[in-house]
Length: 173
Image 1 (cartoon, rainbow, N blue to C red):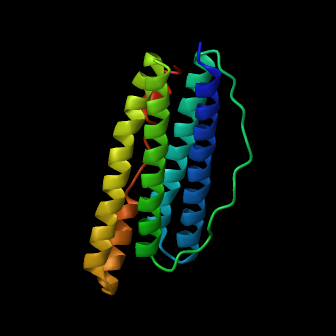
Image 2: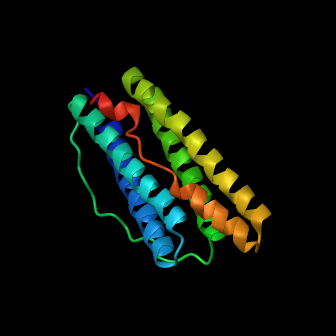
């Protein structure tokens, strides 16, 4: 059984994950409209990943006899001036999510909830990867600068990304 305080915190994280999905869907649609099909694809995959992150938390909460309480999702931006600006926003957002996950883990430690701490370890590792990826794209885009061919190749590279369901989703706990 999970404490009410952790249940509420996980519900807040579910909302944050769904908001992240909504943000990345907005980014995908923006870049699809702007003719960057590869960047649009990359963000479409991120959209699916974030939905799965929310599902992992929902399944976990249900497995611990908690109650999932879905809340409205706040609006998101719909335009970015450039791919660099979008990936800078992505990094800032992922850093915020990292802080939320770390706060959730601190709460689990405070409650001596070892099962929740164990579940959160996957998310902690995932956030390291998310931030590293965004930083890498920012670095690449800074090197590309105004080089149209470089941006074309960057976009083509991101078009190759495919979706793979995260492993914790397979185990409903």
